[in-house]
Image (cartoon, rainbow, N blue to C red):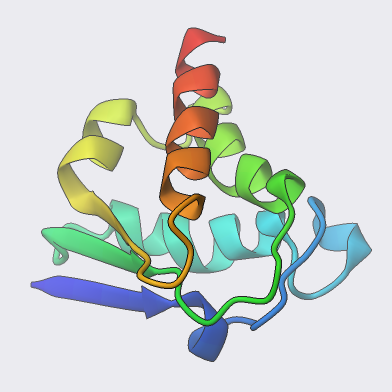
Length: 108
């Protein structure tokens, strides 16, 4: 079964910041409350993260979501590669930015 997560409509159109203590729509909140449960749920063979419709999300948010997930060993790169799909049609730079963050986290 496939799980779609549209960040702009299901989480926040303008998420910002790293840590839960900084607000309700930070990278830590998205990672721990939304993305990780989906990736670790064996019922989902694919988790599609829809990035369209967001308003200028900073790199610290993305690093907290994807980089920390790998650095903290919350999920393996293998699981990310097999299950996670990034979709974005309105910003050609966003997916490469996230992929770069992921690669940096793997390298340590």
